[in-house]
Image (tube, rainbow, N blue to C red; front, side, top):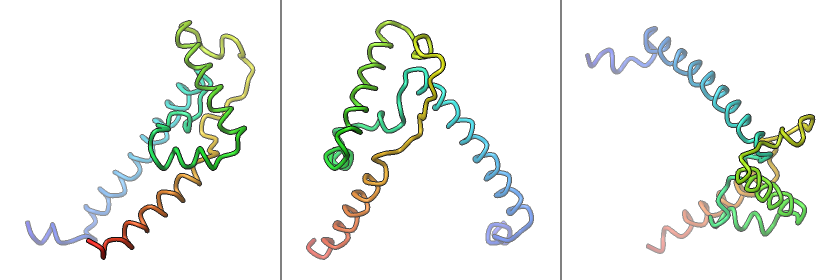
Length: 127
């Protein structure tokens, strides 16, 4: 049993890893498509679902263009209104092209997270 466990290049192990990778890739594509469909129903973007109380998201929102923030607030208000009315955005705008995974703040959020991680690592000597 120990010999098989230590063999990372065994054909059976490699085949299992390849199968699991392909399965997870297919599952993630299906899940992303499903999430995109649900976001389109309300006219939301993935970034609109980020919690603005998180420090990194809050800082990214402060750095973002005012039009980005205004668009986010309008989409959230519209989604709230549609949810209250039990309607979908396609009922009102069937021909509109949606971009649920258009990312406008994501790069800033990632930079802020990396900066914060680096600051933590640099401050570890103080403990």
